[in-house]
Length: 428
Ligand code: CMC
Image (cartoon, rainbow, N blue to C red; front, top):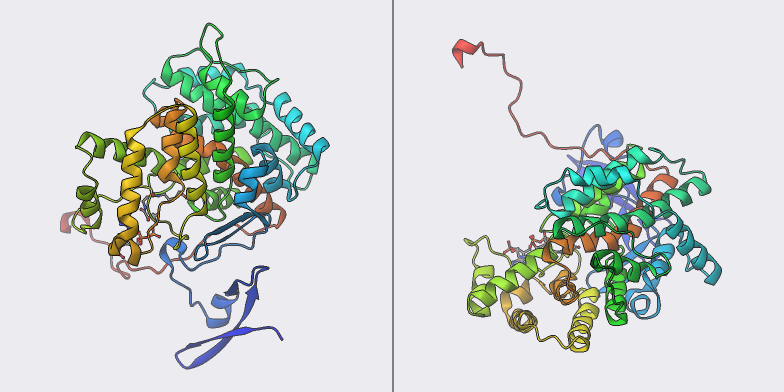
């Protein structure tokens, strides 16, 4: 028998269906709330209790620390798959076979060319511009050089838009870095793998020198997989809601990049390393910063700690922590900032403030340490997150359009002045 939830408002009873997901999550379907109650709405700032959609892409259970893409555990994907396989899985729903994967990669390579005129736009930015601003602008600018809308019901058109974006985005990301670093723009080498080629586009010197390092390629591949999707987070919800107005894919992605930029979201990886550096400069006294984080009159927060959904541990953080150890060891780097990070984590795990609020290290706590070991500058960290999140955004955008979701348009509870007569200027 189907389940219902009963709501009583001023003695009147209203029944609503209860929907159940494949992982037995239940939700009260309030689609008819306003019409059946004569205008009653819900209030849920930050959407902490609101499901904005039904989705078949990513499952996460914050209490148990589970993250799965299309049913596959993140731990297994990080160990056994590469980033392009995971991108294909997220977007199209199944792992590709060898032929599908080879075609996907070759189509991405074929469409990686960015119109030369985009370079003129990049030229207009000051060198000091933050790469996330540059990336968001250039992604938006791509609309001018590509079809501005895509027929989502045409698998061919959709596929083309996907491989175009997957091909051009790493180029734009690398260009954002090269502009800042004062290096000539580069297209890399399409005979290389997706991640290897990206690293080449980032680091190739003007004299042509680039030495591929398999340790770095594997570590970055893993980081991108871990960042590839995370269901309805701030940037993904942004991509879906912008796309729900039938704005194009590139425009929606550009908005997602802006949402990711904030320090409470993707910008946290930059904020973490800056915080760890500041603690090091200040003598490495982690206890002092723990006290600041707990002091409610101090705006300081322990960056890289806490998560809206994970209230046990972030499974991605575990994988990244192990990877940070491996990468630093393989590269022979002794980074004192890693010791500070481990010290903070140890203390937080034993501190009642953090334990009671279920605050654990999140994906960004250790990722910056790996990026830094790779030679990626701090300002580029969030752009790296964007590169990883790209397939997730695309998958979510496509799903939203294929499910023919209505335009996103939340309601509000108005708390301003009630009706009052206009005051002429001399009486104000
Ligand atoms: N340091 C100190 N106290 C914290 C922290 C922190 N990092 N995070 C949360 N708290 C406290 C917060 O002050 C509140 O305390 P109280 O109940 O006494 O008022 C309680 O814990 C609950 O916090 P909240 O802000 O209500 O939780 P939220 O779900 O709204 O916020 C968060 C989640 C990730 C924005 C927050 O934990 C935070 O600001 N963390 C630091 C930034 C960060 O690392 N962000 C990256 C998130 S993972 C990458 C991604 O997916 O984008």
